[in-house]
Each structure stands twice: as structure tokens, then as C-alpha cells.
Image (cartoon, rainbow, N blue to C red):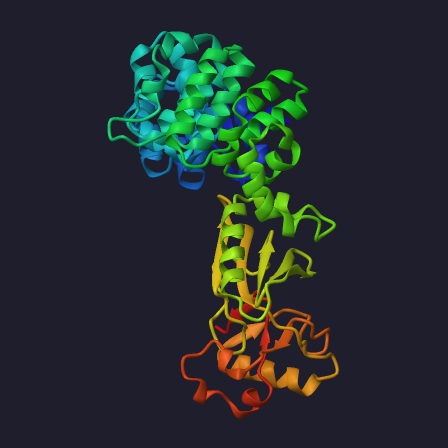
Length: 458
């Protein structure tokens, strides 16, 4: 089929390209690059092709010296094509000007796509370009510096000792900015996996434990000990288990649960006493989810803070759970953990009298903005609105809309009603001027207790 297309290109006919998919065009140009008379055809189609398919022109000319001017013009406007790692490697190897462009725009290119560090490192190491290697290893941008070390450990471990003679000196730049703890902890594991160097692991470990209040090293050691069935990881964890526990960001409960026999009596007595009331209240291991989200310390802090504030009771018990949330009673309040939120990232629940007040709210998101964990503290309410109270639920929704909001929760207004509860007193409503509250609300002060799926009317 390519022969037919080549015949059309020879006579300057590019009209058929519009009917091809992006993949078909890409396949065509990949084969086209190996045609001996490629340059002759390019001269014929160049002007017409660049007007309709400027990217295609770049892909078939980037390695031809006389068209370097076009490639530079194209990349100055958009270098996103260099995010393709396979092409990026070809680009710096096959074009006479590609490496110069990359080095001129090195930091911008790498920060836009850290995966390109692999290709640059490979080029520098295999072509003995110490100048390029130094720009990566000693880069003042801490993100580039840490990812470079990680890639060397992961993919080019053979070169590690020659590059990093005093490894700790590279953990921060001249401004004193430290590498991200997650990177360092993962690299500490790679030191064992790829270099089998316990002494160097200790350098990473001590730096992490000294310089970061919380870390993930304990969880990584245990994960590798379990998944890889490697006793060495378990031994290294147990060797300093108390420090790993105290500084753990996301694994404190798991370390307590699985390594209790190795923890100090002080930790067992203190943490064990604080966590015990919450153990086993749910069939699921909710505490593991809270811990994995890095929220366990905050959970316990808020729980005992509001237990102390409680005057009616000091009970700790299970209240209930939903599709993604678990609710504990702590005296006069409840503390809720959610492992996701249904509302969109940009939406935030309003603070109005129709919705229960959050005394505390802590939300964690991943790199994509998606909620992975949340803690909320609210007043404990015991009287739910019944499914039969349709008129009251309809009035609540009507007032919510009059305030400029919509609710997409199907557990309100006849589909269940269990997400609406009575306040003990309308004076507890989330509003500064309680006298301005509607009369119906003063009589029946009902609020939504699930602060999710509430959207502002646009």
C-alpha cells in the first residue's frame, strides 16, 4: 500500500493524507524515512505539506541538515513531540542539531517530562559526555537532581559509584533544598536491590531519619520483605523499628499491628492505649486505610481533642459507614474518615445552616487532584429524618436551591433520607445570625450530614 502513496507523493499529491488516521500517517512516514530518494520527494511536497501537516514535516525532516531551520522553528512553538521517549532518543542520536537544542532547553524539557532524563543519561554515559552528566547530577533544580539519581540507581547502577563518590552531598542543592523524601526512601531500597550495599543503605537511612519528620521508609522495607520474601528487608526494619515507627508517615498502624513484639514498651503502652478504642469497630481494617493515607496521627489528635471537649459522654463507638466513609462516635462528636469524595475537585461544600458544620476538615489528594483520604469532625446527631417526612425533606431541598446550591445525593428527599438528621438545637446551625433562620428550620432544624455532592448553581 505504501507504494501507491509514494507514487502520489512523487507527483506532489498529498490530498490522500486527509483520509488517513494519525496512526496510518505515522506508519507511512516511518517507512518513508528509509526510501533512498526521500529528499527528492520532500522538495516536491514540502510547501504544501507544512501548511496542512506541520508536525508531519518535522517528523520526516528532523534528521536532514538543510531542514534544521524548520525543525528549530517548529520546536520553538511546540516541543511536546519530544515527550515521546522513543522519538526523543532518535532525535538526539540522528539529527545534527537535536542535541544542541536539547542542551539549550534542558531544564524546561526535563521538567516537562522527567522520563527524558533516562535518554539524556544514556546518551551522556554511552558517549562519555561528562559535561552533560554533570548538568544532570549537579542540577540546581532539586526535582531534576533527585530524579537523575533515581534513574542512575534504577537503570544504570553499574555507574553509580563512579558518579557519586560522596552520595550524601548530593541530597540537597546549594540553596539547601532537600530531595523529596519519597524519592530518597525509594532509592534506599534500590541501594539494596541493585547494589546490595548495606553500608550505603545506612547512609540513606540516617539522612532520612535525621532530616524528615515523617518518612515512608518503614512501609517500603516491610512491603519488599513481604512481596520479595527477602529476609534482609525484614531484618533492616526490625533493626531500627522504633525509629521507623515514630517517624512513619503512612505505616504506623501496620507496624504496630505486625511488629508489636519488636516495639518498645513505651510505644506499645502509649500508642496501644490511644488506638485500642478504635480497633475492630469495623469489619474492614479502616485503621490501615487511614494510616496508608498518612492521616493516622491527625485522626488520633482530633479524636482525643474532641473527646476531651465532650461534656455529655466520653463514649467511643462505631456510628456507621457508607460506600466510602466510616464514622466513629467520640463523645459529643463524630470523626469521619473517607477514602474518596464524589464531588469534583474544584467543588467545595458550602458552609450554610442546611448542612452540618465541620469543626475540622483535612483532605488529601493525589498528584491528579483526586481525593484519596479525608477526615472530618462534626457534632454527633442521633435523630435521623425519616423517609416518610417527604414534605420536610422537600422543604430542605427547596431552601438549598434558593441559597444557590443543588444536591445530587440520592439519599435525600424520598430515596432514603438517612443523610439528614435533626440538630439538638437550631442554635447549633452553621450561621452567624441564628435569628435570621427561617421559621420552619427553627421548628425542624434538619441538616445534611454528608458534605458531598453539593454543587453551586451556575
